[in-house]
Amino acid sequence: MNHHGGKPVRDLGMLNAHAMRVSAEELAALKADPDVASVNPDLPVMATDFNDKLDYGWMVVTGITRMSGTLPYTGAGVGVAVIDSGVDEADDLRDDNGRTRVVYHQNFVSSDITNRDTYGHGIHVAGIIGGNGDNSTGTTPIGGQFTYRVRGIAPDVTILDLQVLNRWGVGSDSAVIAAISRAIQLKSQYNIGVINLSVGRPVQQSASTDPLCQAVQQAWAAGIVVVVAAGNEGRNNSVNTNGYGTITAPGNSPYAITVGAINTKGTLSRSNDVLASYSSKGPTLYDHVVKPDIVAPGNGVLSIRGVGSTLDNTYEANGVPLEAYSTNPSEQIWGYYQLSGTSMAAPMVSGAAAVMLQKDPTLTPDLVKARLMKTAFQGFPGTSTAVDAATGQSYLINYDVFSLGAGMVDLQAALNNYDMLPSGTTAQSPTVTYNSSTNKVSLVLGNGLVWGSGLVWGTGLVWGTLVMPDNSITGTGLVWGTNTLQGFGVIWGTGLVWGSSTPSGESTTVSLNGDQ
Image (cartoon, rainbow, N blue to C red):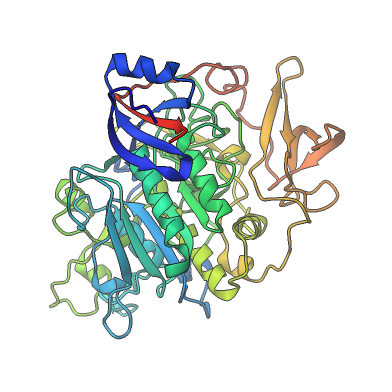
């Protein structure tokens, strides 16, 4: 391939592409080259943790108790690739013989030549997926309160550390794509069944042409479940959408399981669970894909602490008091940390997927996604309000398909579900269309997702009419839950969600999708 004077940065052979650094003049030549299919900026990606204190105040102990009760499965034998800021070999990530379950390290960040998690995000994510609670002791009362066993969803999984974020929690598209490619290459060697992406960036183009989404699609096609954080822009009203249309990439991929965040208020009961106000909402920009797919606990989550990391040093108050997880007050193990965000919700679902794959290794990514969505818990209120304690600003949350998706993950129910996808269908997330003359929204099923006569996942009404793959109209369609269209007038007709406006973004690094 003619580099036109550009400096190669990274080979992205999975996409038949290269990441390169070029000057403005070289960029023009690349765009004009007939052998170059497309040129895309190598955009920055970031961790999707949320450090604002509004939704803090409640601690959620990771683990199967909160998710679904005691289970006979622990994710043993399943590999999970954590594409993040790194994963340290912590005590909670060791097996019963003291051997580390972090079986592979690779750093894709040129500025941080280390296998250590200097940001402190990746180790927290890994603990949610597979921490075994070795540094916590459990349920003895102390001062009238109970201590907790800080345990991950799948405490016997093996972890592959693919580091793409630097010490400030920032990475690049090309690093993430290279890490996904490496996970695909290592799939057979480590039985990788799941990729966790608690990273994201603003959507810049259709998922069909976005290199980051293309990489997700390839991993999915290779038989790997890809779980992605939805983003933390649910409060973003900068363009008068009340947080709608803020799903980040690659969560806009119709293949990925895109996860929003729930605030459990620190209890094991579901009765007081509410959607976190910061959790990003769909539909996705450009493609209008219905996202998120599912939600999971993501607020005030306890997991492994990255001692001395950037997050640890910046937000010292997020360190978990010893008495919250230890029955021995004389111990000095400050091993746990509290974070909120869809970054914390996504690994809940990654752990759940690993458990499902341990029970039935023959499950395809589509079937894992379909069963998780079909069995999701839907008993939420119509609306709730979150108030920022610092500013007094309130945020109204509507429990609709673009906020909640199919509902909250219920791992026990998913494990007990044996439904199969109809022949020839997939679990790609559907899209929606908007008719400005009738003010109605229609669901476009595209390549599947129908579970029977008019049913998609559940028993609730979708607004407007249902458009089948053959463009026939079936009347009132059924989707996910019993939600009604509340407070949505603000997004219909806006250029951001339904129009063709293009968000701006620039970089001197480009990815080339053309012949090598």
